[in-house]
Length: 286
Ligand SMILES: NC(=O)c1ccc[n+]([C@@H]2O[C@H](COP(=O)([O-])OP(=O)(O)OC[C@H]3O[C@@H](n4cnc5c(N)ncnc54)[C@H](O)[C@@H]3O)[C@@H](O)[C@H]2O)c1
Image 1: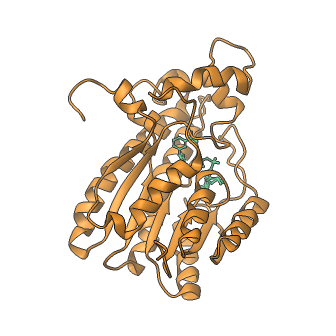
Image 2 (image 1 turned 135 degrees about the vertical axis):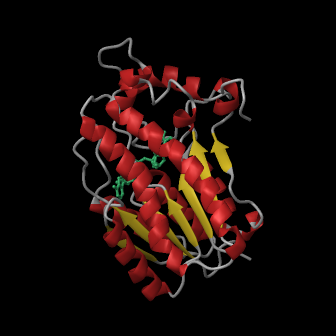
């Protein structure tokens, strides 16, 4: 029996990268998808966002996997647009069982204060908006997953002021996702609805494969290439690998959405190849 048979999952940031992997993975397991993406650039972010063609490609891959996908271009900062997208999807598919709130930006390398605000509003307020839009349609057995970040859990990584204002906004947002998910799990537990966070280490997507990121990982070089960065990427893992693949994160997301995790809630699930335990502050957290 497919693990998501006849279910409907709402994914933000669905046009490419991890969002696409999550959409396709759940479709392979029998789900239909409501896929939202901004599909246009955000000025303060030093690498491009997805394109409308990327979103079409996700929909094509979802179809090939046996699912249906409603594609909506919307900015997760625009709460009404997100509410409208979810309502359209529920109207079309008849129900909502899962949320993957994972649209995100990482505007490192600039001191523009707007980068701080953009990172925080996309990466945190965008998650709140996705949950808010979904809540009226969720019932017992439903599952919410939000994407945090290993780098944000490690003091001195993305929150290092040397990485710019956007990094501070990113870290703040991603850490607040952790707290938000803990409290959401408490609030929704009595209704039988679960909430968990996923914290990836470096993931092999366009966010990581960008000139901005290469410069962050290789501050010793003027114009580092991907090859230069590849030598430094393993510092964020404990298993010697430079990154995980989007599909590795999708496997965790699928687990958290499916009934296999029916009593797993309020968890901070790291898909980080051992990156956190290797670099964590020795006290007092586990
Ligand atoms: N790639 C990494 O190394 C890494 C590591 C840890 C956490 N993450 C997190 O994983 C999530 C997915 O990122 P990814 O790695 O797939 O990168 P990505 O840049 O390929 O994908 C992000 C997607 O979100 C969309 N998006 C951005 N802002 C949006 C907005 N305001 N409204 C709607 N859609 C928007 C983009 O268009 C893009 O399709 C992000 O939350 C990111 O912070 C990534």
